[in-house]
Amino acid sequence: MSWYEQYRSRYARLKQAGKPFFPYAVFKDMVVVSLILAALCWLAYFAGAGLEDLADPTDSTYNPRPEWYFLFLFQALKFFPGRLEPVAAVVVPGVSVLLLLLVPLLDRGPLRHPLDRPFWTGLGLASLAAFGHLTWSGYHSPLINPTVEKDPLISRGIRLYREMRCAYCHKINKKGGNIGPELDRSAGSGSEEWLAKHLRDPQSVTPNSAMPKLNLLDDEIQALVAYMKSLGEPFTAEAPKLFTQNCASCHRIGETGGEAGHDLSLIGSARDKAFIKRYIGDPSKTNPDSSMPGFKGQLTEVQIEDLSRYLAGLGR
Amino acid sequence: MIAWVHERTGLDRVWKALFERHVPEARGPAAWLYTLGSASLFVFLVQALTGALLAMSYAPTPDHAYDSVRYITGQVALGGFIRGLHHWGASFMVVLAVLHMLRVYFMGAYKYPREITWMTGVCLLLLVMGFSFTGDLLPWDQKAYWATAVGTNIAGQTPVIGGVVSRVLKGGSEMGAATLTRFYAFHVLVLPALLAMVVLVHLFLVVWHGISELPERRLQDGDPQGP
Ligand code: HEM
Image (tube, rainbow over the protein chains, first blue to last red):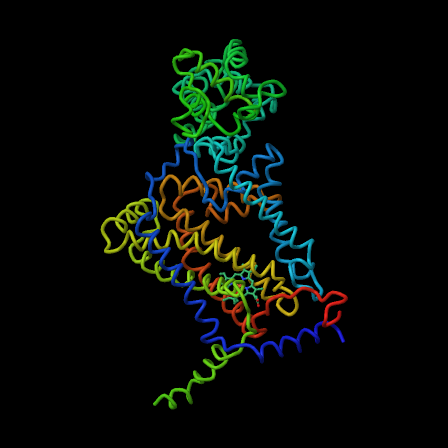
């Protein structure tokens, strides 16, 4: 006789000898439900639900904090920088859910007591511990969120750049053609007006330009200009030195630097210049828990700008 | 009169099957862990009720969503309280469903014959998360917008199908009016319908198989009752 039948007959006996659902179980349910209702009302009345400012899709410096029960996922993302990010963001959660779904097919046999299933009990406890740890450290670390979308205008510019096949002539990040200038070297230094004019009609500002007139719409020009401006602006040779002198005791770029602060090797992929500049000036304004000192006053405005341009270009 | 209704509806037999059915007796404090499923169900009902009330004054367009939420909080009688209930209820729902799952997990209550009950439970958990994700956007404030931007980006990173997933979620390639309307439709039409259906299947299976008994240690050699 397989254990299935044994279980069925044992369960039938236990059920027979058990108690009627009402009121035996219903009573306990009611007690718990009342407590929960009371807690809910208390929270709804005294804490309520917050409402921040109206959504502003152009404010790419906003730092979203996910609901606390998703914090662990965001924290986990930090362990998989750059190209591995999809692994943490999608593959690991996907596999975990699949595993969860299949638990009853993997853990079979009649033993049910947690102490009789050390592997599964251990796995459960380990997952709980990992979840707790990640949530805790996510809660206490500043939000450097590598997946924050940049200004949607910039994203649109990136897409246009691709659709219009600009890379046929231009290079960005060493990829593309040789006919036009390398855009991440030169475009950032042009003013927005100049860039807009150039995109509308290249020959109007650069008479012998080989670039064709693209007949772009105004908002397309705006998006492309935003993208060009985001490519980074030239910084001086002093910027890396400033970093070494002021920041490297706590922060790392590549292999060199301290451990107390975040690794900034890829900071440009997560933050734009405006954010970095504000942060260097006074970290506590952006992240009240930060233990980093502010550099406003310590460094000149020009130096902070220089440093920010340098950092904003890292990892892009 | 009552007999007349019973004869035509079978309500008395439904009552018998649901409430007078026996459950194995669970002794000790662990018995209280068996209330977590009902507690999840209760909070789901609270969410349905408060959600319906909120929907009466909410406008799912980028131009009006934020103002309608402010209107609910400031102007509608008890609006702030109802919004608070729905907001905290969402967190409670996740917590209770997870605690309930942990009870089932550590007690091994997913074993024969309750495997499919467990699988429907996992679907419920995913649906609850879907509620949370889609509901987050609806106030259309900074937090709503940017948290969703991050979320849809994460979904967009899925190997191979990422682009499609993120497009379906956003209703296009950009986040905007289509995203809000779409999330609203998911939040108040698609997900509730799915959740209600899966909850019914889940509860049917729970009643069908009967609530599991408290797990006991395996009998050791030398125990009085023998192995
Ligand atoms: C919306 C969320 C859920 C609701 C409303 C719900 C409701 C219930 C209720 C009322 C019970 C009766 C026993 C009890 O209360 O402990 C139950 C049992 C059960 N639930 Fe859920 N549940 C939900 C989510 C889940 C999840 C996330 C899982 C697991 C992944 C799950 C797996 C089970 C299993 C296996 C049983 C049978 C346990 C036994 O017989 O001891 N449920 N559920």
